Length: 336
Image (cartoon, rainbow, N blue to C red; front, side, top):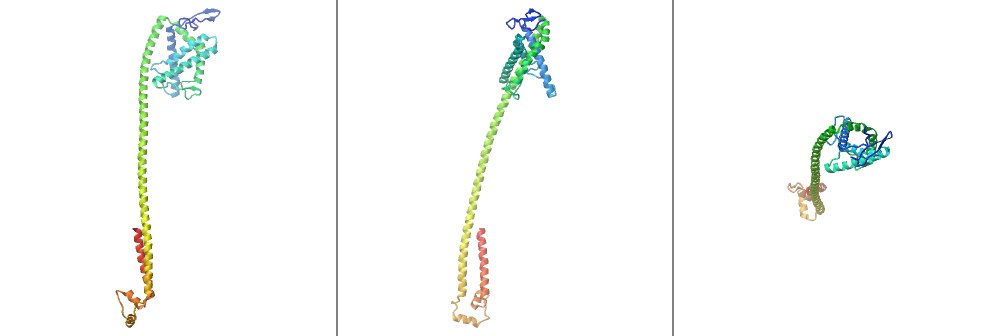
């Protein structure tokens, strides 16, 4: 049975395998490599779908394609076998060869898919020691251990199974599966391109919306600024009017004070004149004395002054009335 070493048909170099002192040489042809690719694509799909389904607690058909194949796993497995099997006698070399090859494949595939479809189908951004989110240290180390497992344990039963199938049977099966996979990939590729176009349109719409929101904010700010300016202008005008009214009130008050002083002076003059009765000639005084019962309804106060019979009361009454009139006039002026 084949031990899994490459021959010159595919690898380009014959590889010797020492088993019980015998030298054996084997080759994988293209059909067999494609068979291994299909098998590992299916195993990868089973692993990913089961893991994600358990994590999400519902069935998830994992992968880029509709069918039960994950090309990244098939490509990775074939690449690991291709670069690692020649170093089968050296486990450390197998580890690092597989780790480096798988990491490069994962990075290149991730970059190409994101640049083409604008979508990351895996992302290690939340992992420590990641590079651009496409690869990370944890994943690379896992690829190394996976390479060890592939070369020394996992690949052996599949190798036996594939090599046990006659070429006449294996070839049509592989070609039919590959054609179905190619059709599935083409359909998935078309869907991914359409998704990319939708994402581009949505992103453009979001940018336009943000631009419109910024323009709206600017317009609102301008409107608010104009409104504030108008409010400030109105407030300023209000303050000016209030200041003008205050000035006018102050002016009126000052004028009223001046007039009050003038009126007070006039009152004093009148009072002084009331005391000064020099204008009453002797004959007038005598006439009043001769007619003690004489009175005047219209000029009562003046007549009483002439008689000097109620001068203190008259003086107090006159002052009170003048004071009341003066206060009324001042209040009217201040209200105006």
